[in-house]
Length: 182
Image (cartoon, rainbow, N blue to C red; front, side, top):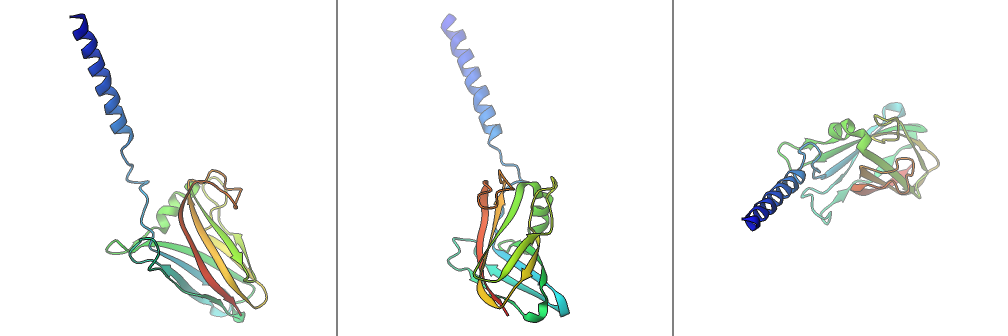
């Protein structure tokens, strides 16, 4: 009888621990990672400059089918250009705009910009719910005519938003746009 009690206790604790493990592994549908298939860079500036440029990977795979438009900033756009990013999942019907969801979870996201070759400076024009850098809206300062690229990354749950070189967290996307400054 003593062995039966031990066996029952062992079974009970095993079931209890197994139940907790299954419950702990459930995905929260509100934080489930989305399939990012399109990034839109919307630029506005002086003299009616209003252009959108896109990076797109329609199947949301390994980006082997990705297309990217060259960002062209004309001299008439002025020295300061406003940039707003839009993020989409085109595998849904209709396409799902993920931008609002990312903004609602701003403390859990960080956009990082790295310009190479092009004469552009990027300054954050927004903050997250904790007053830290966010980056869905930025101001671009245009310099002399040049060509190069701008790399845009979106980090999920960054551990250090003050360190733009290594903010930590998970990388949601990493895309580069060719840039021509006229």
